[in-house]
Length: 343
Ligand code: NAD
Ligand code: DAU
Image (cartoon, rainbow, N blue to C red; front, side, top):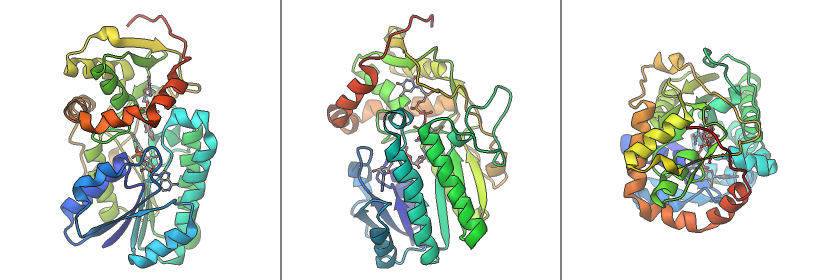
């Protein structure tokens, strides 16, 4: 592994992973391939953009010709696919974009990887493919997929394709399924950056339904370390869950966030729930632990560290909230019925 193609590398987790790779491996070359959708942002990579080991190609993963050209131009031997449409609420508004990028785009990358004999194809997947996990249970890698949103279904479809390329063609693939990531450079449509930035602006925090849904909020840097481990020590054909191994209610997350900011709980506003909202995600992370990885942050530490980053980096998120985001926010939240629920 020397020449990495990082698709979706201008997004949240991808840009953190690019920075991680360049910092830890002096002899690796990192080529970011990204369409720069509303979620892609070259500012996320500004601090590495002059590194001679880094290059950027603007392109769509559905564009087979450009993908293959890039693989040849940079002698790519490893592909890590972060590129995706990623927001569940947007997948409810417009599922087509998710099928196109998350399923068809993955197929295009797999075909290119097969043709050019790529040494490792790594797919970044999500705990959402397991669907709602009943209390007391933890999803293991051998569980069947049971996705319930268009986003989760498109990611599950991609995972099945990736596994089929291992079984059918022997393409050396690995898959990681991560829980909710938080940290620097996350687009403020996702709940934690949305709520921190709303609170900093003195705006309400729109909690869906009763707010008692459970999520495993993990620090993005921990996720990057685990992906690195799977790339170097994981077995081809295998799936690895990655999370903090802990899950908390959304309302608990909100209270930690407000406490870190010193902001009032009166900002909490319960609103109409997300259709088909998965109540609980919970991962069994014993398999990645057995490779020697441990998360460095629990959910609370990850939330507090994230809050501090957004408080200190208004230059990054303020312009984003002025642009496309405003229209989206109005469409998504403008007509949402307010609910009266005790906190
Ligand atoms: P993001 O939305 O911040 O970034 C996605 C990136 O992909 C953007 O830079 C965007 O421009 C790019 N992109 C989108 N469509 C593309 C296309 N057709 N061709 C090329 N580039 C395209 O996403 P993220 O939160 O960083 O998630 C990255 C990956 O991790 C995704 O595959 C997602 O499903 C997965 N994941 C995310 C989380 C999370 O909590 N954020 C958790 C588990 C897994
Ligand atoms: O679990 C991994 C997944 O985490 C990733 O695969 C997805 O790409 C990522 O978007 C994320 O999905 P979620 O739907 O869990 O994340 P989101 O930040 O949208 O919501 C987290 C929880 O907060 C969820 O229970 C819904 C709730 N929520 C979200 C928003 C945006 C609210 O209560 N209010 C909100 O305004």
